[in-house]
Length: 177
Image 1 (spheres, rainbow, N blue to C red):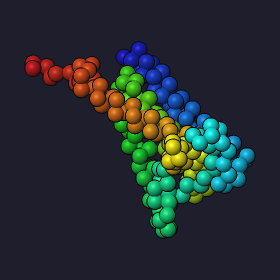
Image 2 (cartoon, one colour; image 1 turned 180 degrees about the horizontal axis):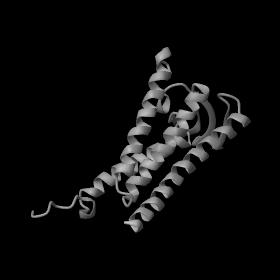
Image 3 (cartoon, rainbow, N blue to C red; image 1 turned 45 degrees about the vertical axis):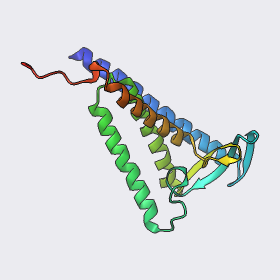
Image 4 (cartoon, helix red, strand yellow; image 1 turned 135 degrees about the vertical axis):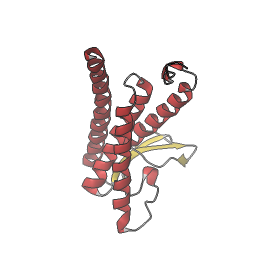
């Protein structure tokens, strides 16, 4: 029992470290952008492909609902972020610590959600700055937290696909079955 508790604690500590690393990298990069660039300023990194462009996103992911002008928008977006944080945290703690792909995916989502929530609470907007374009078509600007959330969701999807075939992830049959 002590070995399992120790193992679980080590794994969960590693997952927490992933979340904290995402949070740190997200907040650090946003800090660098806000200190070195003006809002809407852009710096080309790879011409016609990748720019750093400082944007203040008052909407949801990728600028969704940014044009909605309501005093309830901030409350709604922050409430959703808190609910996501609580649900993902509970699911992570209830899931096996040995499900590495699942747990890393959840850790990435948690770190990203907290990073964007901190921005919304402190500033009333999220700092976005990664600006990609392909053949003149721009993807909405995003940040490290958004990237971590998307990668985390991808890992959850892969985990769901893989768990259908993996007998190790299936519950043990009831005794006498």
